[in-house]
Image (cartoon, rainbow, N blue to C red):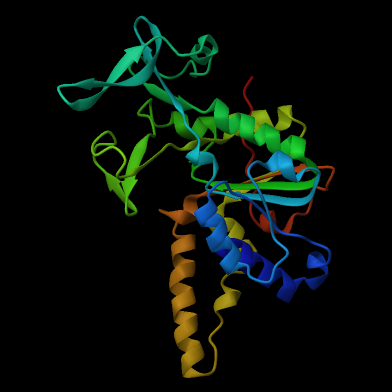
Length: 284
């Protein structure tokens, strides 16, 4: 709830007219997290839903920060005998990879032709379906997706290395299959596939840039102007440290910010002003 709290506070401070009549809503299934969100947003007329469809028709902005990479992926491998899918098996008490025929016949067509023999590719029909469901729930407004990934061309530069990795306490783990349940597994988002799903469901592409470029364009540096009093200077120093983490080009600053619109203008969006609105390649 902290992100929602800060967004609403900033809107009320900078654009109070934008909050009149607005009612915040969070898609959350965890009772524990709902309780935390309720505390963070105490006094707000807050709604919850288990799925976005329950909030339809939405008129406004749907923000999904690091949601796409939480969906499961299918890991496909091109072999000399055709496309195979990676499954997890057990050998002598250890988890191990097993290659089998894809779990769904159409998965074999999701791996790009340029992935070499031995190369890997991750695909997430679940994430694509979720984006399509947002399009159905949105009557008018925007969908803003923030996550780590790239378009198909970006991901193909890895020469089939794959992007599945594990993190524990914000540190990369050497073996994603070791200590199951003790770290998070993730994969880079294929934003080309996400764009294809979004546009197929009726959304229009409105722009894309790195988180660093978007925040710089929106004036995040000005938010750390040097205050006068010592206590305010200490607070500002703490904010600057947090801001630098958000802007780090080798970390959070490399996240992609991708925006889609429905029955809303796409030209002149401030967050893409002054930086190149990088097109996400569309492939058939």
